[in-house]
Picture 1 (spheres, rainbow, N blue to C red):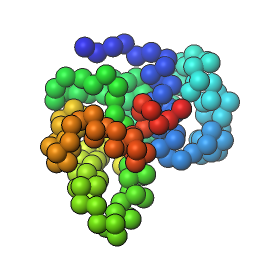
Picture 2 (cartoon, helix red, strand yellow):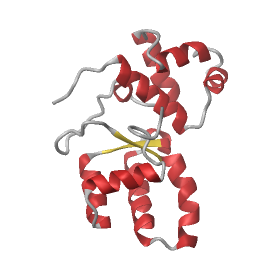
Picture 3 (cartoon, rainbow, N blue to C red):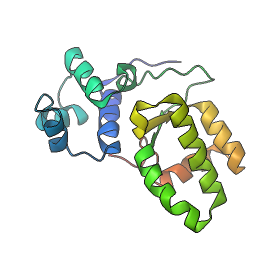
Picture 4 (cartoon, rainbow, N blue to C red):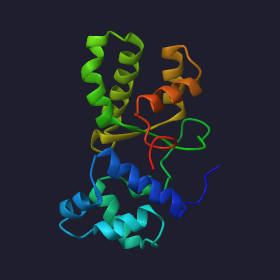
Length: 168
């Protein structure tokens, strides 16, 4: 069952995108050449200010994501919807992957390789963030021979998951 977008969902999505890129509010203002002010963006992220459709489109364009992503309406055609979308920070994953081969953690290497492969195939938003589908989570669960909840917890522990427990 799909829910209507709320200001809270939009706010979380905007913040997750900004944080995935490692940008401060001031950096967004600078990179957008002032068209998205730090004060306004911070207000949107805190749900202190209503966002117009025009500004929502501008923010989606700036972050190079479909507007449906900001609305929490990412297309899911592969099974039941998850209660909370799982958004992976691919920049963090790339940084983490550089050290994996040295540690020899085969399960972790397999997980990051699969996620990277999915992101590449989808061309997910400049390969900086990626939404995991239910089928992706099921595949990760099978690969690691762990329940899906354990896989989610591992992603949180590695600070790869942008939604839920590890971002403000």
